[in-house]
Amino acid sequence: MQWFSYVLRCLIAALCVWLSTAAHAAPQIGLARLASPAIGQPDAVRVMAGDFDDEFTIVGVPALRTDQGEFWLRVTAAAVDDPDVPAALVVRNARNTTVTLYAPGREPVALNLYSADFPIARARNELVFPVELADTPRAFYLWVKPETGAISGHLGLSIEALSEVNATSVMHMRITNFALGALFALTLSALFIWVAVRDLPYLYFAGTVGFESIWLVYASGEGYALPVFDLVRTMGSAPGNAAAMLATACLCWFIRAVTVVSARERKWVAWLSKFALVFTVLAMVHFVAPAAALPVLAPVSNAMVLAALGVVMILIVMQWRRGIRGAGHFVLAFLLVVGFVAWGVTNQLLGHVAPALLTYGLPFAIVSTSIVLTIGLADRMREQRHALQDARRRAATDPLIG
Image 1: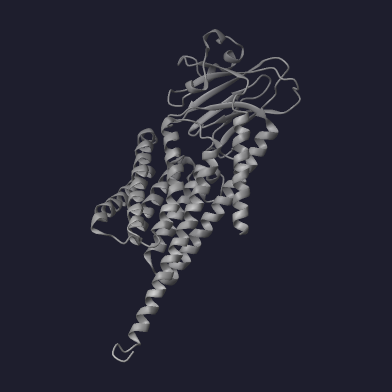
Image 2 (image 1 turned 45 degrees about the vertical axis):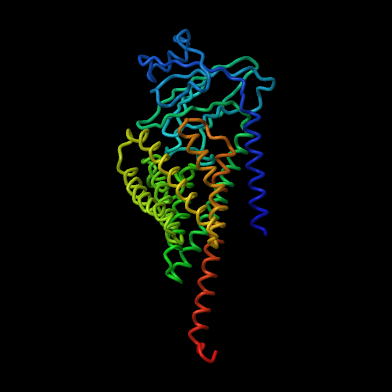
């Protein structure tokens, strides 16, 4: 049970990160936005000099959307008691967006989660700008430039102690690496079993978990820094989106392959086949579609994933109620992951910054689902072995004399 203990420790760590984030969710900063299209990045010197201060409008975080074009943002940090404590300005939910910090007495610093020169020691889930605070209010300026095809979303901004930001970054990488290791191990195990027994459900299961692993690599941001995975860095979120579509397609084929179909369930199984084909097409579309199509393509893909998971849940619940052995494993496996996926999709459609519980809970939900599905497959293999042994016993027994 060592693996269970390690998972429990990681979940506790994720909860601590979440509570830490919640504790620092109300930073003492003031936000003002300058959205005039006539004042762009070339006017940085005049913006820093305060020539346009009268044109800035005080806003709240919900107004900082990435689908409204380029804009200037003034961040006013409150006075601090100890200016010597290193601090950082943290920008979250900035996918497909380049943010440039202009601070007094410093050269501009531009960061993008997909860029090749991203700081190697930091997790690629947020943009971190070390800043110097003072015992008087201090203003910083951000030039926010959403790339073509940036999905609608709210930027999250806060000023936190640099030590806490570094600790959160390290914990993010540790939790992500553990989840990835578990998923890759399950993928390889399923592939080796398929090679040995040549039973298609194991191949579909390996595809499901394998593509989920690839999705997690890119969703966590680490894929844009890993060798091989970083070859498609310039494609932005397309590789992760395509992997999610292929994982869902393999899941539909997997459930279809292990289902003992009754007359009432045939229409639901037929829907799974249709969904699998649709997701395969969507995966290819994500690779070839122009970036400008992403704001439409992403919500459509998310809605299709929710619909497919809904059909999967209906089908396995029907199997469970019919008393099919092993269906209970699938019900248990999907309850948690469907809840997290629904939460994540809804959060993305609304454009909100993902809370830490969702960020770290979803990978562990996928890992736990994969483990329970593995148990279900093992139970299925045991049933097949018993049936084969029974058939051999019957074939070796004379029905007349026993």
